[in-house]
Length: 147
Figure 1 (cartoon, rainbow, N blue to C red):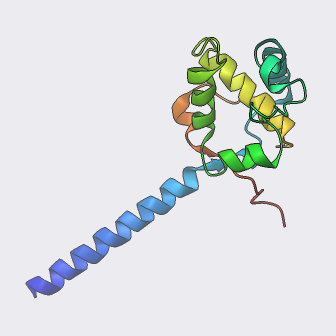
Figure 2: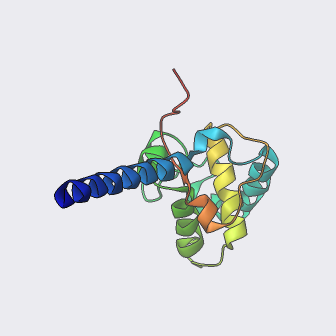
């Protein structure tokens, strides 16, 4: 009898743990769900032209030494990572001649611009500069809603 109760308790723990994992995964959003606004992307574009275009180019295509910020190569590099990862990379390492000089707010606006440049649809609310919120938004090359 005690062994059966223990087995039932273990099964319940596994089920509860699995359910918890499923809920956690359900909380993860995709960039394809409209996570920034067009106005925010416009603000990001102004920051990009002032801070980033000198190296990455006005068209975001980079060159032999600088990685592109637009297109399949960029999307592949960031596939399965989060918006928080991208914002942190920009904030911590860019520009190369002055890393850390881009604030989290500006880095978030830049990410909105990069999403727009990569044909990710805009939504009705600005992308929050809260890292915890951004960590719940997954970057994906493939639109999960596309058929």
